[in-house]
Image (cartoon, rainbow, N blue to C red; front, side, top):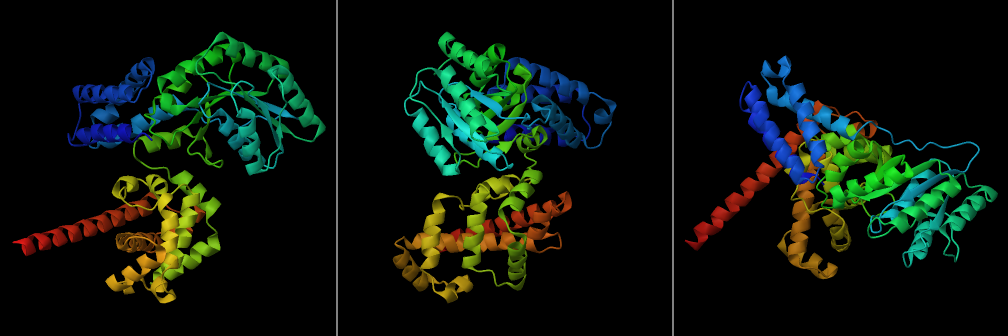
Length: 476
């Protein structure tokens, strides 16, 4: 997400950094480029206009004009203004006592409302509460069955009825929750392909009947300004308490994330960043601003690492890498853990500069099954010492795994590059994986990691160039 916007912002900052000192004219030119980038990202026109005005006013201060590092100060100003635009932070769910707390989800059809209801219920379950999902979407075929399947996957009860009266189903669902010890109710209401009077009347009547403590609008981030327009309509009718943006891991241009708070005045509570039911994150505007500007998101990275990696296992791994005994079994185990965090590419994007440095590294989801087959076709000796795997061994491994020899060669190459990267993380005196798990990585250590990543990529590029030159000489 935001890749195009990030590149354009960075281009603007590079142009300012190369000027030494900047003037009002420089700032005006830069804001022209920023304005164009935001409009191309489908950000609301009025939001863009105000944002550029606020940035310009802040940038015209004496500290920018007189600074020897104007590019850096402009990054800070833009980051602060982006955070204000999307903020403040408010990912809390306000629970009532005695319960149950009723949370109603509304939105257009196709925005991921039913899946989000299950994700939200799973998130609530992890806080020690007992949620109940209530199927109030009586319009879309198979919506009730979908919610039941999702509820079964996460171990959460689903209340449903064979009825066409959404108000009655919602009321009975809340009553069922009270009688069966559920302290939170999540209502999955019906949507339409577009806003219409019948749809708005139905959700308004449900809200009036059960008086939910929280009403969240579920918006598809990939629809850009359409999501913002629907949010405005829903807010006028329902008085929203917050917004949940879905599909932020797709080809979203960022318009909805940057516009919806400014247009509705309601905070973005959560963002969906994948199809799996654990892919719902609390929204932090400062972290999102950092990602948009290509500065990574170290805090979220640390939180994910602490959630999915065991500290003792990480320390053992660090010792193995320091001794040079890191093998394919260890690699496979780490890839499985990284996959739970969202994939290595997503993880690297959270490190400042790392996503662009290693964007050609093929280590995500679909390859893992094939990777496992290849590793399991190796002998114990080959797993422990991958440098033994020359051409004849690669042919035997490929035959055993049912893959092409090229796939084995690619995995061995990927392993060696990853081993170098993991070695850089584990060594170098800056905390490594242990530091990551304790939240101890700082900007200095990340700078070293970025440098290591660049060196690895440069060495790999030099090898490819030398190999290519050799082939050309042979042809001559």
